[in-house]
Image (cartoon, rainbow, N blue to C red; front, side):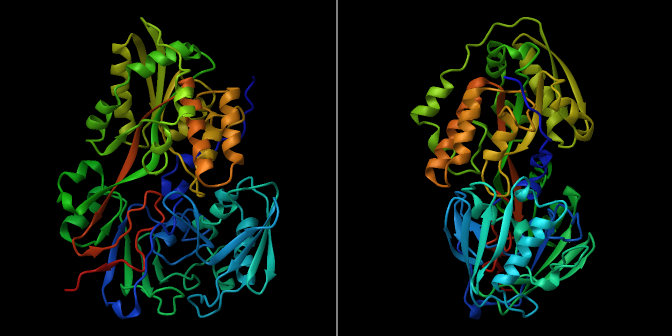
Length: 507
């Protein structure tokens, strides 16, 4: 079956704060009389990219500061929970009715209405570029009355509620919107109000006492953007920051381990094998490469043990992944793998990129492991912007990729379709298999819940059964917290960090 090439979906490669999705995982909130005067200091890795425009990836920062809110939240399994919408019903295959929470006030004192919700969603629909959760999705939104919004999809979309959990679809007062941009300052609905943004240096948020939920305990949040990993680690060691994002693994040993938490990420380092041409067009040769790889050695050496050995494409950040791997359909799909061939002097090209510091080191270890099994490896390592086109065009026999496996809906089907279906736009493996396509299609059509999770895992098994991709490890991010911090969120999907419940010990 010939491959149909679509535009590459490169955003899945971005850091998860730029690609992926989980809001409202945990019940939070405290009573008003627990509020304190303490302000929480936070050191972030990346500065704003678009002047805090919530229609950009900066939306994830606004979510992590609990200043912007969406109609829907997600729980740890990716199921939809009420937020600014209290409930929703599906009127027919294309039409959904969302009931809007009453008595919600924007930070500027204006009431949230169905019309303001419609305005925010329509601005997102009409924006250029469109928020990635809406890429290729046709939505029509209009008021359904005083407290409801009617949303119509161009085709049946069982994940519409999950889509509306994307931070890029947060709801703001009409005053936030100008012809040029969207200003979240003073126009959100969360327990903290964004009161100041100092370019790419920092931001300041104050407790919003008229919040519709439980009042925040901390009086505010003081944010600094600290791209240098050594400086972020030093901020934690010296106590100048209460919560620190993304401590580099190389710095972790110099910090009190009680201050660090490894958070599993929905990001997998995978070896993609070219199934269309070259040695790996033979399934038995692909199987030989699979058998040659020692994942544990890579995790211990390159990642200093701070990663999870991959058992599949989807890792521990998706709580249901391991639960379904022992089911009969999954096991049967893996049982169809080819038997490994004996290789001797088989020449292969191995590509990866320098943008993620660990990948060139992974390439060195893979070269050693593959050559021990009889392959002859020639490496090609460049910056990602200079190597992506060659990878997508099938110029490599093998390619190492660090890949986000969920999008803003918290669902991995789009990743599976993009990377492994015949029409996928990011098919580095050049895979086109009717059984894989059918499994991905079945998962895409299944409503959210346990059945969809089972369908997703069966699609994973179908992909793994081809040996088109050999998952190596699942990444973690190291979050640092001062001993004074309580209830900072450790969110695998990087949507929550400081919530109404987060607070510091008293002096």
